Length: 123
Image 1 (cartoon, rainbow, N blue to C red):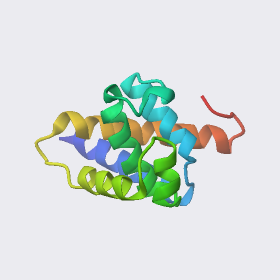
Image 2: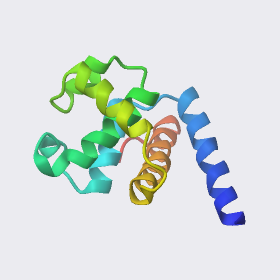
Image 3: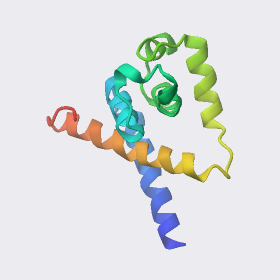
């Protein structure tokens, strides 16, 4: 139980960090492509479905970029981005695997932003 409480507070802290230190779209795209092992040039293909879902969710949530700009990076319209981001936001509590992926991505994106802020560049 202590581990669960610790993980939730860690992720809450990462979310607060991201809201005040906005990630760039390239940082979000890089993190999701790395996790799902999809090349950014292939994200529009069938193999990139999971990566696109996560990208839309995080980009819409944290980047402050318009949905049209978010979608332009992955071959989607602004309406598609908004629809996908909304669906991911209301995940079923039983979808543990996707929730775990989202937790990993939260931390990975936060690490990329922190490296950039410290002058370490992108990964």
